Image (cartoon, rainbow, N blue to C red; front, side, top):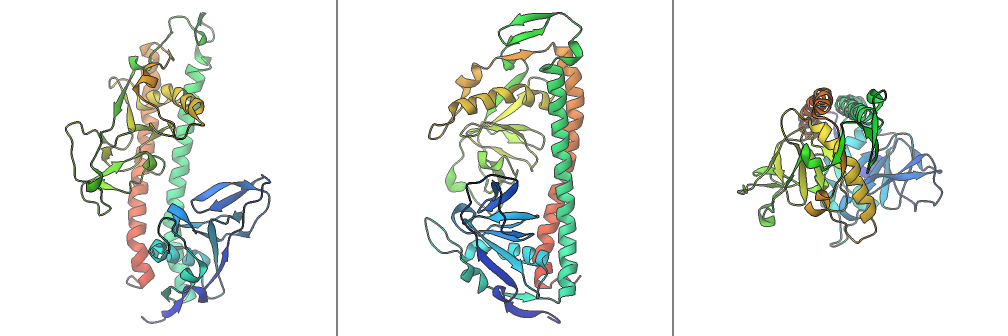
Length: 369
């Protein structure tokens, strides 16, 4: 390839092992093997690349922003004068570093393993152009995510204003209840009045695959990033499908509810869908109604080896139940917010697919900038 030359990573990157995190806490993020972990007062470098060194996230690549501390679970990388740092980040991400790891039960990545990898490198000008294309896609994805977070925060603030602080109803009469003072005409009861909980089904693990055969299987670990790792062709009599905008919660370890922002998939066992009783009730209303109860149970059960929640726990939930007309009034606003989140999330799926399609072709010179 014209202007491209074959080199090793050690010829273009400065690689360093991270250091054990100091005990002092502060305002500087710590990057470990699984991304940002925590905050400390010291810092290792600025705008560098963190590579997971051990465990399940061995070989994962992250681009840090500003001052950070790279922990001893990660390796830092930064381009030398022969390369563009953003280009190096995408280059490392395209290499599937996990395949170079050593070790069995405890996978390990080393500077030497990374440094010996052979790659083709374009001119510094083309590196900058490639980095600009890919980073512009990632920047747009990041903006959309922040908008989604802001919209979800607005919905939560409005719910609190109406149904926890009772601000629009302050001028009315209040009565005593087992959960404190509530507006007259409201009551305390089970969330089942407005909400259904649908439980996932057990799928055969021997049919799980990462070749995208069948539909994505949505497990607890997939709820945060909405990016399932495994697929299955199996369809069960009690199969429950999940689509973007559905509200899901895990039933092991962490019970916080999430908006599903990914593609259509299958609800796995130990995951539940929080669903409105009818179409007049909004999904965000249901999520925010039961979220405090789920987080309370999570806090109470913390300390056990692996905490679990089940139907018997949910059956005991007690919440403040507004009149149906107030639920509908909030739900109209909540559904508009949720649909905006779904639309932005769908755009992000398209953008990330485009980025992932372009990445190997740009990095190999198959597509010229």
